[in-house]
Image 1: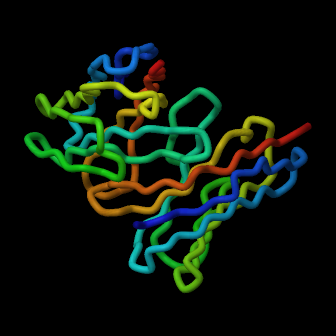
Image 2: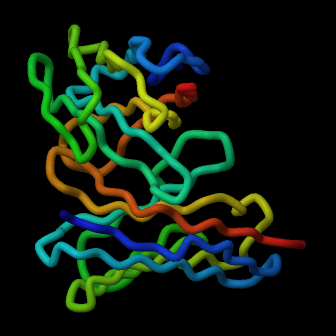
Length: 110
Length: 113
């Protein structure tokens, strides 16, 4: 059974700080990794994907992947109150079948 | 831009009743999915359809059936609802090219008493 683990939080950071969200996965053969954002009462939306070891940056978001350690992270720079949401880490199981972690709730306070 | 549309958005059932959740997408996507989301459990895949005419079980298929009616529509049926099926159900679609990008519907909140 493939597993994706995340700290449920809440992770509380002040506005303007860097938020660091972490995720580990159990299947060493996994190749594709994703971060989804879910606002309260809403549906998830894809914000980042990463396939290779190292960093991938998109605006204020940076995804980091370390396949040897089976570890994925998401950094949010200059955090804003509008970033307050639950962040779901997901690993592809093929055919776009995604295995999701339970999510980390982020709260950015002014 | 409708995207993925689910109906109903809310439903209350008694134990043993049956119901069907409907899902339709207008993005000409090949693949469709049904997930359930429970507090502390994240999203868990119930069933998926990689393409029209095919369906496969996900992580938690017991107690559910699905029908891929055509390329647009993918329904989820609970034949005999149980309190353990109280959850928020999300339908999603994707192009099927393994991009990891799923487009989700707004969700259907189901309560089984």
